[in-house]
Image 1 (tube, rainbow, N blue to C red):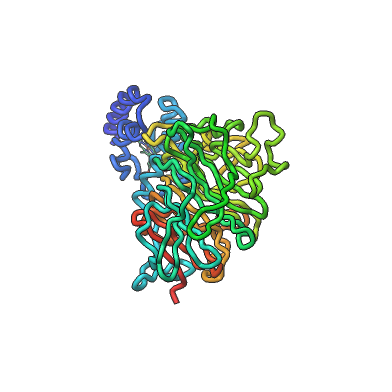
Image 2: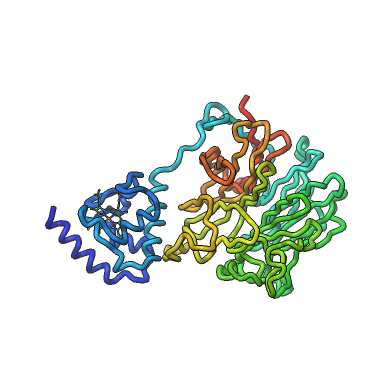
Length: 463
Ligand code: HEC
């Protein structure tokens, strides 16, 4: 035993000298796999994917073990040979592998289209299909569905006949990559005003740059009419690149909150003179509330409500607690659930629980003074998308839970909240398709909007 440990230690020392600048999976293979196994299944060192930890599974503890070693047990210290960023990257890589080895249990099928979860049983039925990359789902008071498709169609769908019309005359969109027609907003005074809001990737005049914009208009006889611009930034802020547009719309009283992703320019999320990488607040008519946090700061974008937000794809207001919740995509790892509060900095890209997509390490820190920590985070990333606070009658035991969709993992998760704390998390829908949006109607019935296949799935109580 002593000999083999010594031998392995020498081999490890030789390889440790050559690995700087390497990707995290390669770092693992050259420095750790000899003892912990190629798949982290264990060997001379313990398994890193069995969910059991000598100290605790806390990410800071795992990082500390890698940094300081466990000399009495034969785990070498890597603090001298690895940077803090690389150690963080290894922790993320271990979390990814561990999650892959221990998938969390989904709902139990208990009959045709009927499922049982911890607190409620439900039925899943497709009520509309043949949608092309649908992005947002809303129900109008007369029962008709409004669905946006990212390619640039706004569909009005009759719930009984299934008949659908594409509304004519909506704005031209930059339909490219993650850009296109995005969210639909129905304001609280819709029945009086008839306003429908649309967020979309607005093409710049060069046809290649773009930024999220918001308009409102009315739908009359299948036609978009009376359009007004609610938010459109100056073209100097438009960017090339096809990623991270945001953009969810949430009405709270007279206010409209909306998100814009960092547009792939991560450092700009910290730059208050730019609109990207932020949550914004305006009045529903587009004017700027005088008590916004940065209205008096010279050079700052006056609509900014919070900053340091990477790519928010979920925004939900809870009328009972008055809290505004947001979910955003991390890079590789580190998707976040955040409580959104006036003027605060959510840290991207100075702190994150993720690393670069290509597996290179990113930052050492997950937290910093003056920056808000997420309420929870997901590594590996789920690609969280669509978020509602459930307050309905159909599923009484879900009251006070956030329902969060996921694109990459194709899940619907229930996040049970108590005030501003997450107290339980449950996977309630699995493998329906990439889950883009979640909508709850006045009876508390839940509707899921999925991509691949593009459809609306109704989730109703099992009885
Ligand atoms: C020379 C062999 C060896 C190498 C190389 C090695 N480890 Fe270990 N590691 C161990 C041993 C032995 C333990 C303690 C296992 C036990 O006592 O159950 C351990 C423990 C750990 C633990 C704590 C596990 C737990 O259950 O709490 C972590 C995390 C860890 N190693 C990560 C790494 C990483 C990451 C690398 C590469 C950078 C690495 N190790 C390289 C031998 C090694």
